[in-house]
Length: 192
Image (cartoon, rainbow, N blue to C red):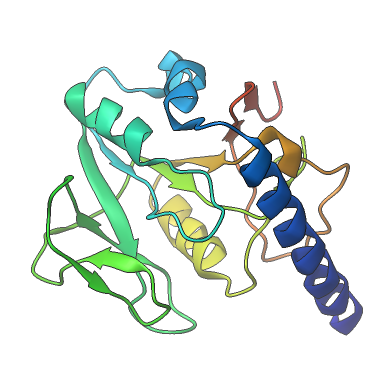
């Protein structure tokens, strides 16, 4: 297990540099995500869709989230409740007041209503076509998906630049797979 942790640590540094390079070379691709987001994923009935507030060179999912809001869905962003715990999702709309969370990421205020997402748009450092995702190492999304999947089947969608794809992401037993990956080039259904 310690070998896997060390391998992932090295891969995270490489993947972060790759993402930084890809992001610098890419035009603004946020609106392109809207065109690639599969309509089959969008429920007919209004649901809750969560995204993430982008940090660093992450691709920006907020225009996609705004588009889904315009189609009648409720939008949410995650908050870090505590280290070692799953994320909590709170309602959010563009223009809402935000607070800086414990990891320095902008989060909805604690007064915002807590919700359980039907679809989660998830950040990552690298992905492969098996649906494996290399995250930041905190395990927040893995714990969150494990908890949510115990109570139903939310759809986990990795949001990334196409250049973040790798041949194989090493995984541990606790790593939760993605159902889809959406990039500025395509939408990849895992297991299709």
